[in-house]
Each structure stands twice: as C-alpha cells, then as structure tokens.
Image (cartoon, rainbow, N blue to C red; front, side, top):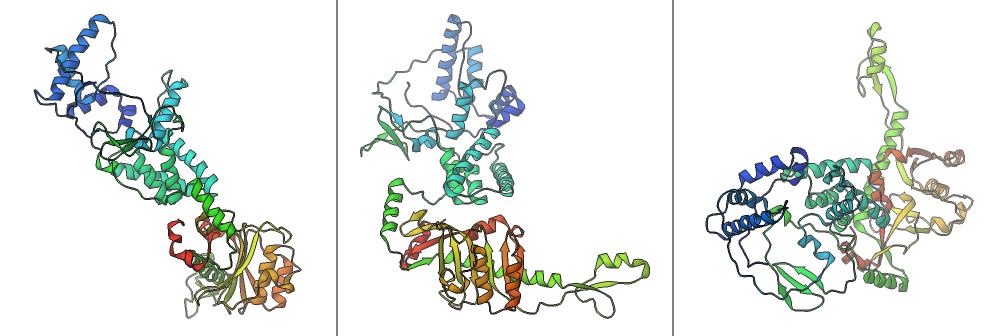
Length: 508
C-alpha cells in the first residue's frame, strides 16, 4: 500500500492482437509508442524503486515473476540494467476491511466484461488453458450471445432467426472497427443486440454480459455498492465512502444505452393482483400495434389481388401494343420465327374483403384459448375476431397483458359483425380456422376472401365460398417474413382506455 500517485490513461491497442502477432512483438510496439514519465515525477520514482526491488529479489531467488504496467516496462528494464536506487516512501496507515462487491457494481470494478472474466477463470480452473490452448475472446463472445439467446427465448417466447444472427455479427464487427477495436467490446455487443433484434434482447445481453455467476447473493461481509465519482456505499447506509480514483475511461466506455427497465418480482406480483381483481369490462388494444396490424392486412389484400392477376395472366403475339411487357421466354422460344410475344395481365374483377390469418389451428373443443371479437374504434380500423393465448397469462404492467394470436379474422371496412364465437349459424365447423373462414365468407361484401395459413383451405370450405358467390385466395404463410409475422402475432390488451396514457413505459 502506497501513497496516491499520478496515473495515466494511455489508449492501448486491442489486446486481442496478442493472439495474432505474439506477446513480444505486441509489447515492443506498444512500449515504443508510449511517452516515458518525466524525470523526478512520481511515476519515475516508482520505476526506480521497482527496479531496485527486482535486483534484491533476484539475489534471493532463481526466478522472479514481475507484473507491471506496460507503460513502465521499458524504463524499469533500463533502470534494472543500469543505475537505480531505492526510493523510500512512507507506508500510509489505513483501516482496511473486506467487503462483498455488489453484483451491479461489477461493471465499474472490472475493465473487462464480467461474464468474459468468468469464462476465462472457469477455463483456467478446469485446465482448459493448459497444453498450449489459448483463450479465444471471440469464442467467449459467441458463448455470451448463445447464453443470452436461451434466456431471451425462455423469457419472451421469441426466437432469433439465422438472418438476424448474420446481421448481428456483421453489425457488431463493423461497429467495433469504427471504434478502432479488433474484437468487439461490451458496448458494441449490447448496442448490436438492441439495434438488430430488439430492446429486450439488448437488455438480456447486457444483463448476461455484466453478470458474474460465481458472485453469491449472500455474504458474511458488508456489501459495497460502487457509485459514480469514485464513491461507494456500504449496505443500506446513507453515508458514502471516498474510494481511490481510477484512471478515466475512454469516451466509448461512457456512452449510455437506454433500455426498458425490467420489472422486479415484487412489481410483477402487484400487477398480477391488480389484473386478477379487475372485471375487464373496458379492455382495448394498443394503438401502435393496431397500425402495424392494419398495414399488414392492407398488404395481404394487395398481395392477394396480385395472385389473382398472376393466375389469369396470358401470353399473346405482339401486334400493336406491348401490353404489360415483353415475355422473354416465349419470345426466345419462337425467335426462329421472328415473332415477339408480350404479357397481358387483366385487372382482377372485384376486391378483397376479409382476411383470415392462421398461426396455429386448434379444435373448437379446446377450452384453454381466449376467443373474442373486438370492434373498430374509427373508420381506419377493422373489426377483428380471434382466438389467442389465455388472457392474463403474461402481465407486463399495471393493467397491461401480453398475449399471442393463434388465428385472426380482419373485416374491413368495419361493419359491426356479430360475435363469431357466439353465432349459432356457424357452429357446425369443428376447427377454429374453419369457423373464422366461414365467418369471413358470410360477412364479406366483396368477391374475394384472403386466407393465410400453413395449409390450404379444405374442399368443403371452397364449396361453401362458391355457394355464396365468393372466392378464397390462399396465400402460404411461409411467403411472409418471420419477423413481420412475429410483430403481428404478439399484441397487448389494456384494461381500460386510461391505461393508454402510460402503456408506452411498459411495452417495448
């Protein structure tokens, strides 16, 4: 223990380079670029003292391990090989004590990402670093991502697609290169996860990255909380402690990344009790999700009309008009005849009315799903009838419940359709998908009904549509992006219109 001394915060190259160019070359290159401490400074005196102590130790021991700042290495070596003298410094008397570091303070205490430190220490203790095996930081980051993905999938019931993984790795790498890093640091990792996937995954990556699994929740020692401006607090005491100042961090280490705060166990318990006590008479949807849903249904109607037009497309020999463009295939096939063929796509006769979107079919007898019909609040919304996961299964805020569609019927323009699930005229259909499709056929004012599902409609449903002068346009659900379908499937139910005033604080 010594008196406080001047410290410098020199910008060091990424230590991952050591794995590529070797330690000796790395040390020589970095040490040559650092400015030595001026003569007579505290750092210069410390280097003198370290060299002197090394000489004393060398006389007593055959080999000595010397660990120091790379900025002192060249000068200490010069003093050790040349002239040096002992610098006597008074040892301060301080009341030292042992404390248990709070888990939330690990990011302030450790310069490296805490979870990567855990992986390194675990590999060292289990012997994986023996026999010349090197710790690969990129593999450790991969383990961090996979651990966070497992937690994210379990907590939010969401999966990360292969396309997202590719984009995430590329984005993280490019962001690291912009900050002059060979290997991504915690900032690039967290920001990449947030921007490519979503805020929930970014928060999960942050939670895992700054966790240290060996850290215990209980300890016989007082808990030390590290605070900004080199301060600390023991337990729940109001009095703060002044700690030894640390070298300032570089700017990229101090960037703030905002996330939606994850609720505590006590808050979730209060929200659950509040939800269970309510009668849910005035439930409503979340308007931003309504806009996403309506835009998607509008796109489905447009895509369905394109399918109708494609089915009626014909190829004609060119006479006076190019119609809808040149048909290359037929023209090349008849090139020896010097004939040109063009495409003609007649406009569809009629419009698309209701849209039925099926994520997971289920029999009518199944009683664990929530089945409801909600009506439009204004002219730009549609009436919807759906079956979904049980209402109240996942409460995410005061009066806010998150659930997932299993199947949905969208009727636009809104016409206050009867409740599909209570309508006795369509009770004969044993599957929920058939019930929604039958309702779409009966309630449609237009010729076409769009049906999006994994399987095409049955022959009986097509016969029902033909009997009612309607036509079903089947669109495989696989033709739509998984990310888009995920946004449509997840929705929130609010326990009253007043909840909309603060729902944005709890819905990501």
